[in-house]
Structure formats: C-alpha cells, structure tokens
Image (cartoon, rainbow, N blue to C red):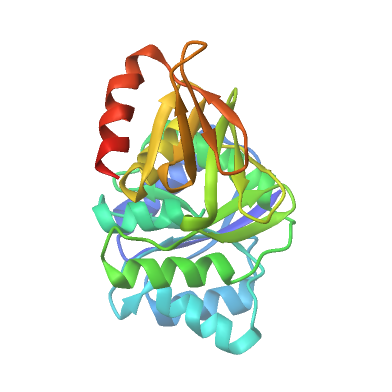
Length: 253
C-alpha cells in the first residue's frame, strides 16, 4: 500500500480527491491531510508519506515553500510529489519542461488515473531536487523561453539544454531523444507532447515520426521523395504535407 498526504487549503478539493482515490484505486492510502505550509511540513515530518499531493497556493505561502524547507533540512526528498494547480499557462508548461506530475483543478478522473499509474511506477525509486529546482527556475521566470528540459527515464531524471537536442523520433507511445554529445534517451511520452513543448524553440515536425531542431539541419534533399540531413548525419524523411512549410522555414533561417 502506498501512503499519501493531501496538502491543500481547499477542504472540498481534499474531500473530492480523497473520494476519487478511494473509489478508483486500492493501492493508495491517504494517511493525513494539511491545509498550510506550517501544517504541511509538520505532517510530512511526522507521517513521512510516500506521495504528497501538494497545492501550489496555500493560505500562508506556497507548496514551493514546503519543498524549499525540506531541501534545507535534508537536502533530498523522500516522497513523490504530485502538484495540484489551477490551469495557469506558465505553470503547466513549467511542469512539463520539468518532468513533474501535476493535476489541474478541478481534478479530472482520466488525468487522475494517469497520475496514479505514474505514482505506482515512481514510488520506491530514488528522487532528487534537480527537476524541482528546474521547475522553480522556470515558474519564477513566467516566460516561455525555457533553456533546459528534464527528461524522466526508468533510471532517473536527466536535465539537458534544449539547444543541445538534435532531433526526436516517435517510437509508438515513446519518444527517443538524440542529444549532442550524449547517447539516445527513450522517454515514455508521445512525440506530440514534445512537439507542443518544443515548436516555439526552433523545432519542426517534418514527419509523423520525426521532430527536428532546425539549428542542426545541414541539407534539404529533394530527391528520393525528399529528406533532410542532420548534423549527426542522419537522413530524415519529409512528409509530403510538410515540404512547403519546411522550405519556407529554411528560407527564413
């Protein structure tokens, strides 16, 4: 049984989330609740839950204040964090770039199911503050021009400069990243998700299976149906529907 703590200043949300968890999973037990930074820290230190459902905005501060206090005290985190937030554009994008789990208010049943699956996979593995530090860095900027991205794999969290990503390739429901001076990394998220994150950073989806960083494009070849040669000397096919836009982008480089 996975033990969990709810930290949210909205009693109705805590009650509703607890009801959903009771109804749809037998693997997570709510062992405590808190409604502020102060009571949240006290509950974490006393109960030592494996999972913390953590609201961003609390009456006496933020969920980030709790994490920073824990970091100062122990230098690490021994619980899997699931943030709870309103649908704030900058916050949502920051969570995705930081590879952190979050639930939007009001909590959606399908999103909760996906989060429960992630919790089961993550609990028991070593964690660190690196991706939380990246989240704090990004969310405080309140800009879309994120410089780094966290990629979560089976062996941990890896942080990379966005500018070092050469290309991404779809592998069914996974995405393989090809990164400058690094071995390929396979991530259990779809290419579509990364397309939404990276398009504004100079990336272009040129094929159903390929998202490329235009900064690493070496050549556009019209023969053999059309393909591009990347800086790592890979040949990437271009979908017919993408050729015109790609040519326009190349002319504007």
